[in-house]
Length: 264
Image (cartoon, rainbow, N blue to C red; front, side, top):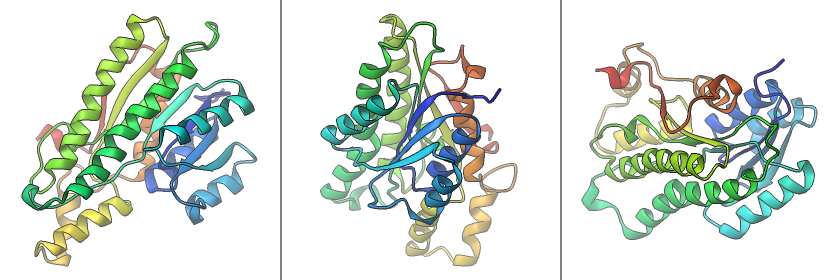
């Protein structure tokens, strides 16, 4: 038996590195996946996952900051599959730079995607998940935070604010769901630096602030005691664990997948 056999999952931000890996790993472990992203088409990476999934992964365009679009995604999911078992709130943005230099429009966009998108997704998931048959395993919501949600980081204060918010929101929702008898587990996952397009954005910001290009990869890898950046699969495997019955008694906590970064 696979770890998430017959689960129905929604993964946001699915066309990015972590999202694509998560969709693939969930499908390989028996789940049916609704992969959503803001892009009109899934792109090469996710497109290949969809093509190889034998129908287990389908794509929907979806803006996580739009409540009506969340409603449409849930309506389509419930119409096709009758229930929702797993939500992975993965969509997110990174912002690098001095706190004083961030403009209001960029702050609004960061907060909308990283915070509002997670709140809206969780609201819709609660409504759908709370009425699932009691004989089914507990539902699972996995919210993407970061090591930046656990400790401060210079030149990334606003990003840290959003990821710290995701951490405490997840804890509060876990307690609330348990108190209300919803049979929904809620946890956050906290990657270190992951070798994805978002990490490339961090590197671009470092270059813009005068860090020599030849030092950037060494600095990123060296931030982890294991001396490498995480792969998207490293994070995806953690998400599959939290979605599965292997984590049946885990709620309201953080899974830190950071190669030892926060142990220092």
